[in-house]
Length: 374
Image 1: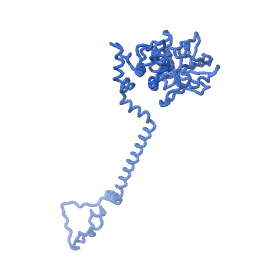
Image 2: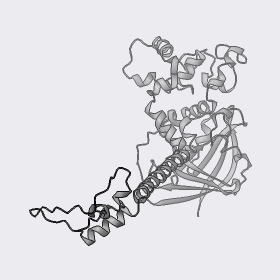
Image 3: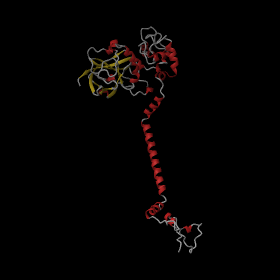
C-alpha cells in the first residue's frame, strides 16, 4: 500500500504537499500503514471542509474587516469632532457666558471688583447701624438724587444727602449739567476725570423717575392685571422703520441693564390701554466701547411728526396679544426732573423720551402720542 504524502490535515488546511517543506525527509514508499483498530478514522466533512477552505482561501478577509472597522471609527470620530466644533462655533457667546457664569462672583463684587473693601469702608462711615443691608447696595440710590451709592463713592459725594453742597440743586442734576459738586461754577478737572466711569443715561432716568408724583410711583407686582410682565412687549414706529422690545422695568436699579435689551416702560406709569401717561424711555447715544445694540434706538424720534403712528403690542397672561395704536401730537424738551412730562390729564397718552441733545444728558426730548382706534 502506498502512503499518500499529502495527509488529510494538510488537505483541510490547504498547506500543500508536506514534502515541500525543507525539513521533510520523506517516507519510504514501501512503509506499511499501521492503523490503530481501536481509534476511529477521521474523515473530512464536506460542509466544514468547504467553510475552512473558503475562510482560508481568502487570507485578506480579516485585514479587510479590520480596515472597515477602522474606517468606521475614523469617520465617526471626524463627524463627532466636526459636530462639536460647529456647535461651539455657532453658540460661542452662549458657551462663553455659561463658562463665565460658573465663575461669577456675587453682585457687589462684580460691580466693585477690587474696590469692594474701600467702598464698604467708605459707606460704613455714614452709618452707625443698618437694619436693611439693601440700603448699602452699590446700585441703590439712597438719597434719590439720581446717583447710585457707587456713583456717590466715585464722586466723593454724600450718599445720604441729595444736595451735598447745599446749593439747591441735587448732585445728580449737577453731574448731568457739568456743574461743580462742591461749589459754584463748572466742574473741576478732577471731577471731570470721574465722569467716564458713570452711566449718564441711567442717572438721567433715575432723576426723571424720582420726579414722579408720589401717588404714581407704584410697585408693580409680577403678572398684575392682565399683562405678562415676564415677556417683553413690542413697540413699532413705521416712519422710522423701527421695531424694538418693550421691557417692563420693575425698579430704577434695573434701568441700565434693561436699556441694553430694548426700550423701558417706567414702573408706576400707566399701561397700554389705560387712562394716564405711559412713559417709555430709550437710548439716543451711549459710550461707543459698550457695544450696546440699543445705544441709539431712539436717536431719531425728533423726526416724528403729528399724525405719525406708533404701535404697541403686549402679551397677556393667557397668551393673547393686544394691539394699541397711538398717533403723534408733538414733542417737547424737558429737564430730567420736570414733572410736566408725566402729566396727561384724562388722556390715554404715550410719551417716548430720550436724552437730548444727542451725546449729552442735559435734557430730555419727549414725543407725545394719543391713543386712537386701530
